[in-house]
View 1 (cartoon, rainbow, N blue to C red):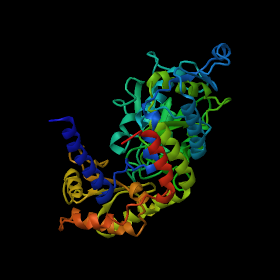
View 2 (view 1 turned 90 degrees about the vertical axis):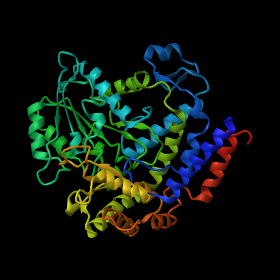
View 3 (view 1 turned 180 degrees about the vertical axis):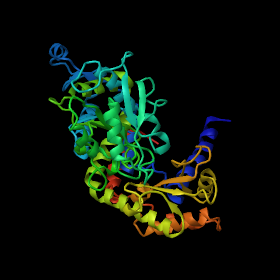
View 4 (view 1 turned 30 degrees about the vertical axis):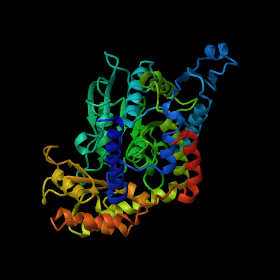
Length: 475
């Protein structure tokens, strides 16, 4: 088969998939989003094929390179033609710091898991320096103890001993205790007892099954009462990065030392990772931040995907402009969605007094209707895309009793609280084995094809067309 024939066959598959996911499906996977056309266009711009390796210059290096174009700010760049991307990276730091309420931003990780691993590796180097209050490393030079969320209770795999924490902990990983009244909440008083007993070096908040806030403030207030003990508090915001603020929670202001995460879930950017903190000069953790910079490059990355870095800047500008409106709508839509599902006899997980969720996620239990995998497949066959999920009391991941959903993507395509009543109806019909709703779903989705919380199509057109023409010489 000729190259042209192979490509045209592939083209048909690409177009069909684009139409299906973007125009015919209700997309409810909590870890996904569709970037705006502006962000997508930036992703394929010239930087997508370029390199911009750089590291912080030591004082003697800055003095030796004074006047050299390779020295930009306090960074040594190892490639030419990088003035533009240096400017972009500095703008990303500034805009994201504004968004998250921090002073320091490391934008070079290319995934949330890489961001976590960078912090874990940095901790190993940092604790060897002997910092007051922070537990010393064990005999093998690793962190003695880390506290995190157990995988079965929603903890992300990157913060597990078999994930990015692999070989980083010497003695034990202690899991947060779970509230007797709610499997999705941490028991704060029991947490305090465990922290005082085990004195973990690093305490990692954040989950992938994330429907309630984490007790960051409560932990920080407790730690302030313990003399000569100062763990590092980390908040993995991968799933909730786009809703951090007054409508959910603000981890840096509540006491977290470092926030990590991915930038393509509730935060509607390209697929990348990010690390943020308030570890500016004068902070007792400043040396940790410098280790994080070094672990980002050369420790974990060479090329850090400059096309998506440019796209991240545009997404952050969008987020800073539409933040309050978008976040308020996401949380409100999730609560409404949960209520409509409950009204239709579907078992909804979480605290009913809080509307079953405080985030973008809605968890339902479907075991009385079948296996979660089978239910998720039936929903997909009806153009409703979800994520089957093992719930905390399931005996095995192989037969999950739950479905995990998120409202963030469809909120961005304009769905309001009342629209999720129709979505709940479609889902309940499929779960209960009623007649297929695929054609109804396709018809319903036609009402939600224009993306919100970005420039209007009219405003975007000139931006997109000029960049397109600058990329492609002739077609």
